[in-house]
Length: 213
Image 1 (cartoon, rainbow, N blue to C red):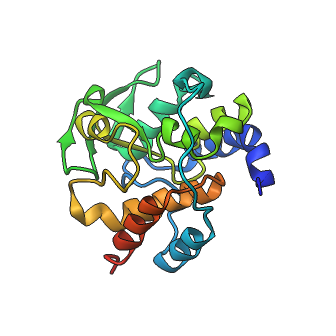
Image 2: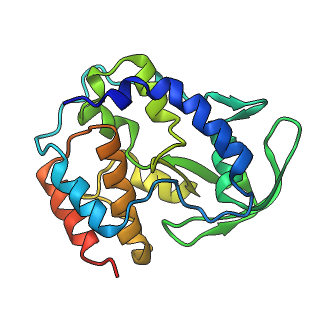
Image 3: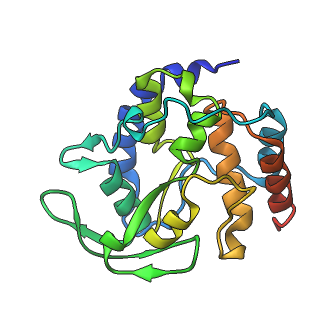
């Protein structure tokens, strides 16, 4: 069943992300909003539709418009860099001029924002195979720029590109201490967007949740 919140996603992104820009401190930890506790994550996982992944037929990143303007000169990427960095300063174009960033995936720290990517926790191609192929462009845009939920995080470019479009059955962060949190944010995103999961993915997510303290 498609949740009505998906249909409203494009509208909600603009309102909620404006609040994020105004309220999120520049020295906040690199953590997407809406990370569930372990018990809630287990419930969400049990509610996902389990099925074989769909095909890549018709897929294009262009069908998930990003990065969009969030507020003023700031687009989604710049907003996440500001949210996930420490002591971030920006220029008039909103691009960071100073600050530091820590990659939860592999423990890399940098003062060069160009060396970090904004990762879609559930990759766009994975979303396509899991149900987004039937969405409208507005829904896919809302998903690709979702600052309201556990879907975007600043990480090292090398870790993001190593991950590519893989799900947890074939890729998990090399920093094992983040495995529990990674599982919870992956599950939360799929649950929020009513995306399906394959059995091997569910099995690995269950394993990762078992590592949670």
